[in-house]
Amino acid sequence: MAGHSKWKNIQHRKGAQDVRRSKIFSKISRELAVAVRLGGEDADSNPRLRLVLAKARAANMPSDNINRAIKKAAGEQDGSNYSEKIYEAFATAGSAFIVQCLTDNTNRTVGEVRHVFTRHGGNLGNDGAVAWMFERVGLLVYPRREIKDYDKFVDAAVEHGADDVEEAADRLAVSCDPKTFAALQQALENFNVPPQLGALVYVAKDPITVSTAQAETITKLVAQLEDLDDVQEIYHNVNLS
Image (cartoon, rainbow, N blue to C red; front, side):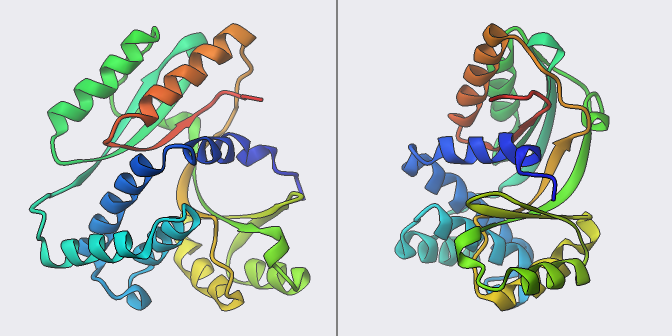
């Protein structure tokens, strides 16, 4: 077991978002809409929808909000047509960023994302500019206290494609190749413990260390990106304490 530092930045950001409930709920509603339109409203046959539902519950999103978002997407009542966009960028100290968005107006979104990076001395790059610095990984994070039979859980994870299970005091992080993610997710559902996080994420291959001042700048940059309605996920290659 390698400890939990590998996922520290991802988990830190997720925790920081908890103070902005309404914005989180709005972003999750978009994810629900996309999941339903791509795979239908039956969660049993739609792995993507199951993951978003788990994310919604982990964020304490009210059931009424969840059901309303699903019904809107199933009936296309809101008329929105969200598409996924990924932007790559550079910022302070040569830091690299991948920003995932769901948008119904690409021009608006790219303009807002570019503006935030420019304000903090960064700039958007072309497709592929920083992607090579990251690895695409399937990640499922579970509350450690809810896993009653640890050995059985780990055995099942490894049997169904997990590359690693990292244990911390309060969580278990299960990582895998993206190709085995769906099968692993389904197998671990048998333990009846909803994941706190379940997604395909970007992990920096060689994280960099920056000065305290540079870390503060990057933290502010991340916070302002999170405030953008269209931004869903942010990944970077900086070690932040």
